[in-house]
Length: 119
Image 1 (cartoon, one colour):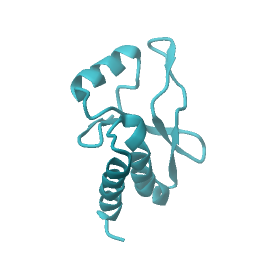
Image 2: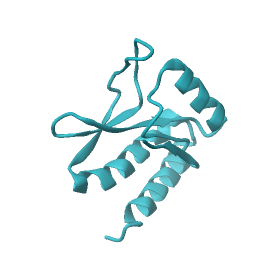
Image 3: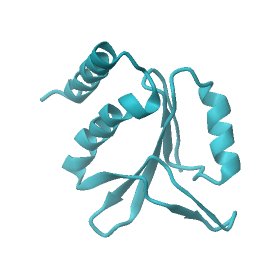
Image 4: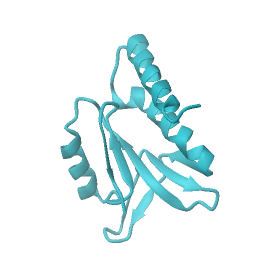
């Protein structure tokens, strides 16, 4: 499988979901992105686990990203947050950071565009 294979599979799956379901909402199409991340993560012995609470010690509160990339020792390697295509992605990112979401090694996407922060 080429490096682009999972991306082509993702685009095809999103197109099919939209064609069959008639919706581009985050909750409808995000499962395809979850599969895309895991296609790249599994060969590296990582797994994207959905809806795990993340405790932000600076904010002293928990938030729940859509996914947390973990290894077998349950160490966090990164985070994922999906948004609707109708959302202003930059505005939504700012809101998530204001709520206490991790501000490094997190990927925000709306099935059309992705933005990442790294360490």
